[in-house]
Image 1: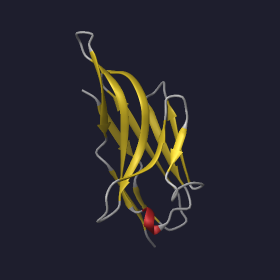
Image 2 (image 1 turned 60 degrees about the vertical axis):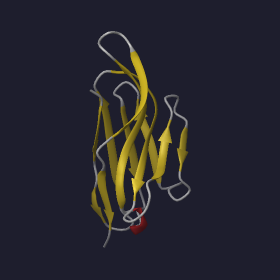
Image 3 (image 1 turned 180 degrees about the horizontal axis):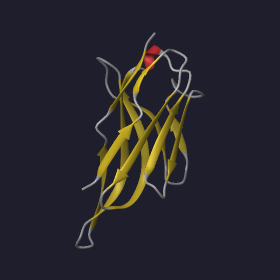
Image 4 (image 1 turned 90 degrees about the vertical axis):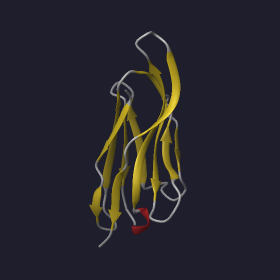
Length: 124
């Protein structure tokens, strides 16, 4: 069973930094894109950053220059380094993976998987 487990959320003051990590495990054949989304209070979920298995990245305009996404393909992990945090970065951050799952009979299927989410609060 595929699992995405996030860590690293918490409370930080404006201008501070946090690093989020996400590890994917469980019958994974390959991972295509991985990314981080966030859902601020009372708002819809939005893409923060994504990275392909080739290392190409994409960022929301609101985080460009402050956040950096990276991944370790060998460990099936993706990280989000968040610097110069602002109160408007407060949200539940969720890890996403577009991956191909391998079943015991040798078949496989591609799908979208999500972590459980981790709270990031930026406040003084």
